[in-house]
Image 1 (spheres, rainbow over the protein chains, first blue to last red):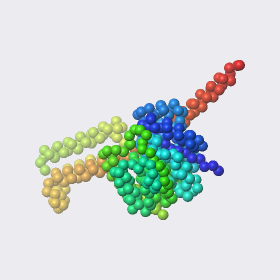
Image 2: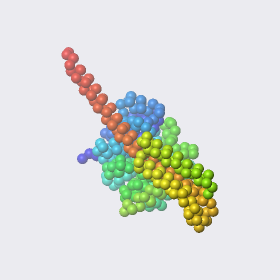
Image 3: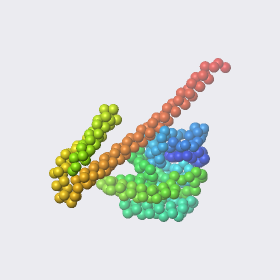
Image 4: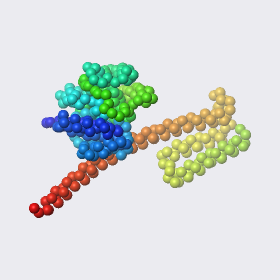
Length: 236
Length: 131
């Protein structure tokens, strides 16, 4: 039986980027469905989606990236998708690599796949300070779970049906990417990192900058440790 | 403890209970949450009433003044309540999130059904017009 794949695209104030992302997606992968989650943007994102008759969910209040992506997982679960892929709505993720990210799920060699910038070190590598932060979180996750993931903040990832269900029920809020890895690792998921290329943002601003970076680092580190403690008993 | 201070404390506790009763009557306070407030009010009442015996215990613990003991206990109770309130807010946040998600998913279904109905109506209209 053919496996149904859904691409989840969270979008917050992406009026300039979202059309490009959707157009290139439906051009390259016409057989794959997608869903855009408009996280109560206060620019024209919704109008753009309406005009192009895109498949979208419009959140009535802003939930942040975690709640937005989770809505996508709930949609994927309710509509019986077998594979869900997350990509950012800002065009950072080069979707030529989409098939590479899905492949291990389709072959059933992994439960969760993470598209990583730091395997082949190609494309946009992010600023030096960010790489230091990502490296730190990566080491922390390695210490806490023994699993080595290099690009822990990558939002380019795919999961199978089991994890669609898990994430539909429970998904970290705020800045969920590193926390999701911990949850996956602690519940014995097979995690695989595949090389992808990312671009610099097409336009608009990153959600994490300035003082938020400090808050982000502290919050995520704490979340990783707390999650590790609360999920201890489930480790295989 | 000076008698005036004691009367003042009793008045404060009385005010506390009256205010709580008013909120409760106006249904602005759920029973499950009002229990913790009643409980801490009673603790304060007991402490003020039996401050003499209480002071002996405090001296034993190294706290010289009865008032200081009251402060310490009141602050502890406040911290405890703040923690309970944070937990309530977190739970509400979670429920709120689920509600928003359900609402958005339903909105999408309504939108799709409306489009579908419009399409059917247009088709019906097209068919009813003779060539």
